[in-house]
Image 1 (cartoon, rainbow, N blue to C red):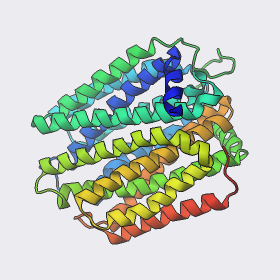
Image 2: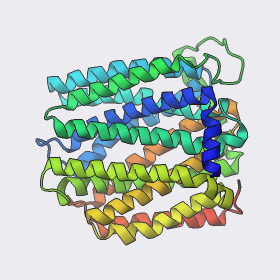
Image 3: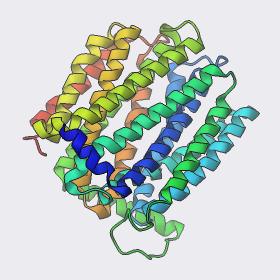
Amino acid sequence: MPVVRDLRVLLRLRDFRNLLAVRLLSQAADGVYQVALATYVVFSPEKQTSPTAIASAMAVLLLPYSAIGPFAGVLLDRWRRRQVFLYGNLLRAFLACVTGVLIVAHVPEWLFYASALSVTAVNRFVLAGLAASLPHVVGPEQLVTANALSPTAGTLAAVAGGGLAFLVRLLASDSGSAVVLLGAGLYLCAALVSLRLAVGLLGPDHPTGRPHPSVAAGVALTVRGMAEGLRHLSERREAAQTLAAMTMMRFCYGALTVMLLMLCRYSWADNESDGLALLGIAVGVSGAGFFAAAVVTPSMVDRLGTRGWITACAATAAVLVPALGLFFAPGPGLVAAFALGLTTQGAKICTDTVIQSRVDDEFRGRVFAVYDVLFNVAFVGAAAVAALMLPASGQSTVLIMSVAVLYAATAVLLRRQGRCFT
């Protein structure tokens, strides 16, 4: 198979393997940490979770760092990205340990969230840096396959880390702090693996040695740099249109995620443990969809082009969401989780590829930071909308149909924006 052959070529590249190892360990730790936080907020027996509570938690964890995204991009275009992976993961390991201590100490929730926010802040730098670094370790002709393998493998690692966290939570009571410390250990491993990459290997590709700006100068640099990055993106219509479509699909995915949490908590199980187990199964099934996307996307891009495959993913989701979701039952819900994992990840692979191939390297960090900000805002906005529409049971026909319409509109707009590009 061509995909298998291409993967073998990529895995022979030592620098690609090392960057991939950093991604796998970092995102596995992210999966552990995120599940620890989610289960602490949503599935703690003493908490009466509502859609509004879930939306509030997502806003606390994600929305404030929409402001950090632009700063991350500007700094990533100035800092050595390998150093970002080293020191960023070391810092996250320390902060995760702090979060574990706070869980044991039963501190006020605002202090717990402040610690979680600190880990999320560093995460913005690491994930944007991983995406911006990929073109430095593979050739232009290998980007589609590399994007099918690397981010998808990272997502699967996050799913695996989340599954491990679910297992620890199910096997041991009051294990929230232990799960967080497991994530800290994985962050430390990611930092150590990053030492295998040369300091200057991952760019950015412009002269270094410029002095760090003051705080005021840094703010001005960020504003000016983001304006330049957005102007650069606006001049590359294909990248801008693809990013807009991916943002809309992320919004839909976020609304359905809140629905899934409420269904697992209150409609599909009689207690918190059973609901947590169902959520773990759903996450695993969705991860299988991510893996399927990595396998089929390169061949589908060859056949349809990147825009054509994103259009097909959005159209497929528009049909399957109501066809499966309106049952409000675990079986069809798990099938929908697989399908949405495939379509969402397939669209993301294409979006990553378009941005990497259409955006100049000196702007790539800023553009990927914008990408990250849009992801956060779309997800949190979707959670807020879902909170207004969902009953406590999580069953809402109106939400299902609204999401289906948005998927369909995305497919139609992409189709009308011109011929497919590769």
